[in-house]
Amino acid sequence: MDECARVLELLGMLLYVGAWLCVLGATVSPRWLSMSTSLLPVESYELGLWETCVVQDTGGMECRAYDSMLGLSPDLKLGRVLTCASLAVGALGFLVAIPGVSLVNGCEEDGAKRTLGTTGGLLGMLSGVLCLIPVSYVAHVAVVRFFDDTLPDVVPRWEFGDALFCGWAGGFLLAVAGLLLVLASRSAGREPPPVAGPQRRYQVMNTVLARAEYV
Image: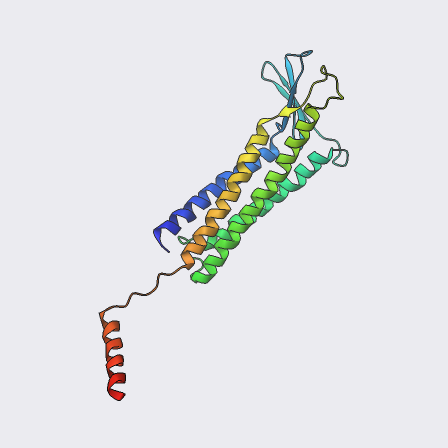
């Protein structure tokens, strides 16, 4: 494997770990959406996939988990399912990609290493897409509800929380990390054409002269 492929491979693996941790942080964070009201300026509300929280102006926070999953809105249900699937696929892709790394000696065959690296990269790209879908959908629903003209202006609206931006970053970086692993595996599979040395050229010349003498 050439140096360019090694750099892409190592960069992809490091980016893979960081992006997966971002997705994990976004999944467990209660700050997908936030809301503050003018009636209670000392309190704000945070909404996540697993719980809702009331944040005091003094820094205190009180959270309460949802009583039932079936009673959740469709965007939160989709967020739970796809973010958990993203984490599972991402972890599987990372475990598959580890034996395909050139620095790991567990698998000696180059063809098997390229296959494992490519498979791990594709799973990483899939994991990123699975994370971007629920994050974008929750953001879309929040925008639609925020600009809903049927609601009075005095009604508080949900706005983007920090977890949405963390989820966008994690999903995008997971897709980039998977692409880097695929490119590294494809680059490793390309072997330069053999260069004819002096001995090879001497054998070719002898073959040509022998054919000429036979004719």
